[in-house]
Length: 110
Image (cartoon, rainbow, N blue to C red):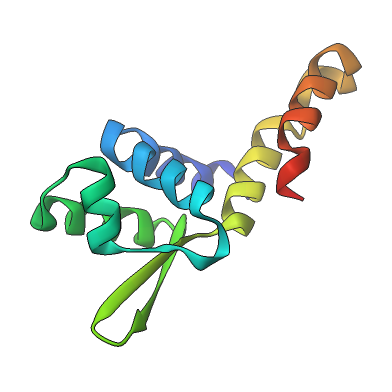
């Protein structure tokens, strides 16, 4: 990931609802959630939720798959990993005081 890819990805997350959606889908894991479930859990109406999901999809932070009449949304862990890597790739010249807490916090995602 480079700055030209990272910038729109960060822009997609720079909204309270979209950040909440992304965090909810990360928490949901590989099974994901339907658009209706996401809207219900975050108390967001369908047309507004659709717009937020579209923006997150366009930035490749989430993916969608049709399951019958529902759309199932999942966090794209590869994009999330690339974004974290982009932020940390030149971090503090490898200072363990900075990198170890971050590594420990994301160890569960590997």
